[in-house]
Length: 178
Image (cartoon, rainbow, N blue to C red; front, side):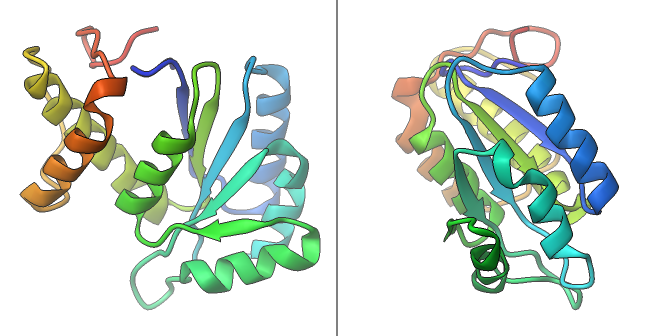
């Protein structure tokens, strides 16, 4: 779906070779006029190399995300696993920072794909809803968020400061425009 700012956010929990193959096919089937940016976070016990291999040709830029928990994989180790496949992944840290980096890099016509794990996509969904509400309130619109607060208030302030000028929320039933 198109997001304020003129780019698309796509969230997909693709975390194994088969689901990565389907994601790659869907991205090819529905091209965008701009670039496709990856925000990837995976768990250490997954077949990371095979997932990345399936998606290697699907992205113009990659941002690695650290996942939390005992099965988590930090962004440095994830980026290192991409190098032998010819994937240059820059480290994005935690999901909030990686989403900010992707939004800062995106231009109208681009697509940002967040994928690799429920541990990546779940927090991203909440963070994006939270940011949409914060920015909407900041520009005088009201959007109801179904999510819960994921990050401390500084997260709203940082996001709002960074992207308010680039975002105009169109208040639809779920806060995004079709």
